[in-house]
Image (cartoon, rainbow, N blue to C red; front, side):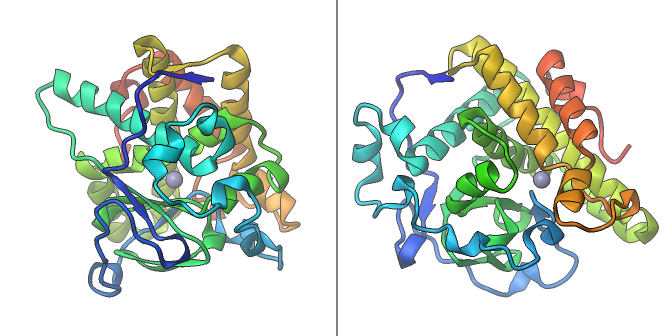
Length: 292
Ligand SMILES: [Zn+2]
């Protein structure tokens, strides 16, 4: 994949690694909205990160985890997007938002930008405190995407999803949850879950698959708009990643029984198919309505 030449935009970044704060540097209160009924959309089911794996020790092992300094200046240097994970993820985040903002504008809607938070170890969010072991997630009440960059290595080594576009898919998926939040889909889904707890997992799967679909839509629109140039190999990486984080794969990898009733994100086949639906449909509408 290749990016356009626009510099990274740090205005929606909060760097909380090692206690640092950058960007707007807003502190989030630990309590409040996170208490009751708030869903944290974890990319990776908790059970996948269990069994004593050393996920939490990945922090600080990649070059992307070097002290941030002036991220904007460092990310503007030649080769920075390849070399530094924090530059790469921020650039993807920028491009995902740029595409969705343009889409919203076309229909006369304003697009409220989400914030990207880098953290390591643990982080206090509007959805409560989260450990790096849960993987990247989006928190609806504070409209933030939280990423411990150590996950990028985990994605490759533990889940076997290779390549930069696999990582881009993860970022686009999380921003997909932001779309669901600002359009009311997330709230409607949560209401439906509360009204019918027996459907909680099924509705969660619908929401997650729609976020995968949005990642596919973004890929096509970004490619068309020149934000990102995607090759067939990139597409394969994204599809491979969508499969790698399927609930059946994660359960099998964790050595537990593969139980569709317990799924919250969808199977490898479902996640792959949803990404492709969006990739081929190329409109948010092609990702359907949730709850269905
Ligand atoms: Zn998700």
